[in-house]
Length: 286
Image (cartoon, rainbow, N blue to C red; front, side, top):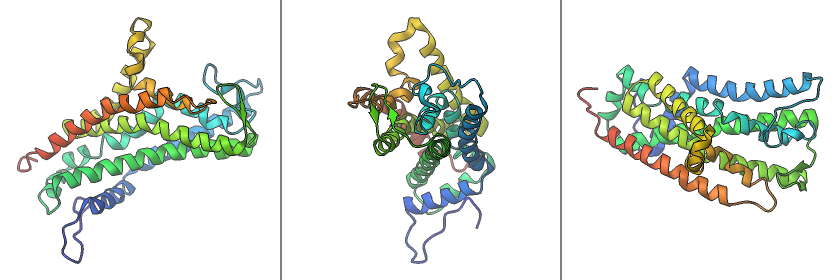
């Protein structure tokens, strides 16, 4: 069976979203770009920790949340990594797969085979969405976990000073780091939705990957222009900072709530656009 087909259950029943999702995960396991993304998610925190270890001046990244505590506790390492990872790294790793997941089969001519089989088109699309989100969250989880574990082994799992100046014990620091990572996943999943839309519409992996990254960079440029400060709360790039509200005592829910609905403003139209194009795809023309 080729990678483009979806196996029918032995009972003869039509496969559903679950079957498509599992098959999409198998296809991701066979693609080099999947492992490139995962390897980068491991390598970058390690390089950051190594750079801190060999820096005899005892310095660290400036003007980033928790940068003052990177040598006091390992809990600070993944939090600093989340801040600089939003500039280009994590959006790029997300775009690698999200921007390819439809276009790759389009360019290879195998998408037509899928769409003419017994699986409903919306089920194929849903399976691809779930696979792209799974990869995106896996990259984020690995990125944070590597920084936390290796940073903790190097500098210990000591209490963490929050952005409010209060110190919290290791158990609470771990819970808040996990919660902050989940909040960070909202804008990152939105980047995946944009990548999926461009992958579906352009039918070109390179264009979709580059286009997704350019959208992210463009919003960062707008955020850096002081004359456009009024737009900042509604930019996707700003939502990558919303997780910091969780690392305050008490929790500042305002940026989290805003991130949820702002991300929805970007993700839902992108997903709807992609679904509409996918459902109307001309099978006979490829």
